[in-house]
Structures are given as C-alpha cells and as structure tokens.
Amino acid sequence: DGGITQSPKYLFRKEGQNVTLSCEQNLNHDAMYWYRQDPGQGLRLIYYSQIVNDFQKGDIAEGYSVSREKKESFPLTVTSAQKNPTAFYLCASSANSFLRDRGTEAFFGQGTRLTVV
Amino acid sequence: EDQVTQSPEALRLQEGESSSLNCSYTVSGLRGLFWYRQDPGKGPEFLFTLYSAGEEKEKERLKATLTKKESFLHITAPKPEDSATYLCAVRPGNQFYFGTGTSLTVIP
Image 1: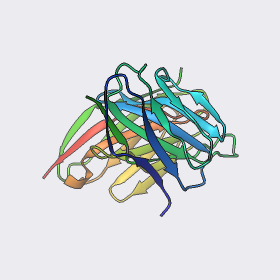
Image 2 (image 1 turned 90 degrees about the vertical axis):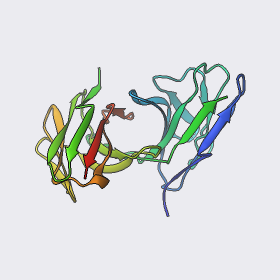
Image 3 (image 1 turned 90 degrees about the horizontal axis):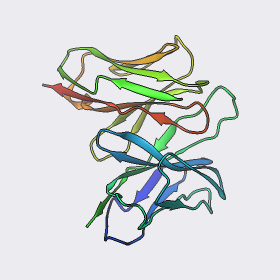
Image 4 (image 1 turned 30 degrees about the horizontal axis):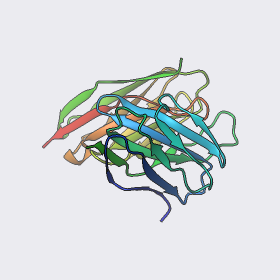
C-alpha cells in the first residue's frame, strides 16, 4: 500500500535532549512537509522540501532541523533549543504539479505525539 | 498575506440535521483549495480538491463548493460517524495554508 509512515507514534523527550522523528513515503512524491499541531492553533509549517537535498524554513523553524538525503525520507530533529516541543507532529507529502494554476493535494501520515518529561 | 479562516469553530448537529461549514480565504493566486477530515489523534484524511469558482465535488453525505472568496462543505443528513474536525487549506504556491478547523459533533 502506498502511503506515509511516521514513527514512533508516541515519543518522550527529557529536558535538553535532541530527538528525531521519522517520516517515510512510498508515493514517489517530490515535496515533503513537517507541521506542528497544537490545540486551537491549526497546522503550522516547520520545514518543507520540494526536492532532494533542498529544504526551506516554514513559519516556526526555530529549534528544529531537517535533512532530505533521499526522496522517500524527511526526518525532523527537535533540538534542545526548542523550548516548548510538546505537540502533535504531522508529516505530509505531495506531487509537484507541472501546471501553473493547479497544485496537487497533500497526504498525511498518522502523526507523532511528542511529550517532554 | 495568504490567510484561511474557518467557521464555526464548533458545530453540534442532531443526526439527520443538514448544515454547512465555511472556509474563507485570501490568497494571491489560488492553485487549489483542499478539504480534509481529521479524527482525534490521527493525521488529516484528504477529501476534496477544488480549483475554480463554481466547481463542486461530492462524496457520500459531503459536498464541497467553491466561490472566488470562500468554500463551503455541505453535510446532508449527517450520521454520528461524520463527527470529526474538518480542515480546509489553500495552496498559492509550494506551501499549504490551513485553517484552524471546524469540530463537528453529530448526536444520535
């Protein structure tokens, strides 16, 4: 089955610790995205990547880092510099459209819930 | 500035009571408006893509429509299993901009 796999489903982080969230897709999509979801705030973009070896900061990139070494994979590291990391993290992917006025939809993984302990 | 606003924030319906959810947007060059359904603790599930004013899409009890400034998600004769948060998003370029969603509860 084609889709996006996020792991782990639940993650606990100690103060001062870096943790990495995994996101893998087998949809052959070029674009991948990381969002953070907090209650009442909707989805906020952390980082996105349109192509391998390239990525762009979103609205809330501070305290996070990413890499895009393979088309299928877009891991997110939550560093100790992120002061309030407890949230629900969502990874998504989409195809890059070749039509100027037609963007394609994004598909999401099932999320990782990160809690600071 | 690209922006998406959804209303109402929360909606409670009796089973069978039809209603509509609203998604208003301001965007510089719309390349698609997207509707998603999200269940608690899960990732959003894609429902519809709309591109042009006047376009409509249907799936079971859901119908999405689009004008130049807003989109509506009409729910006809809802059932309890339609309870979820419904998100809309726009894509003016490479990024997606999401609204904060409407939490729908359908009471048996």
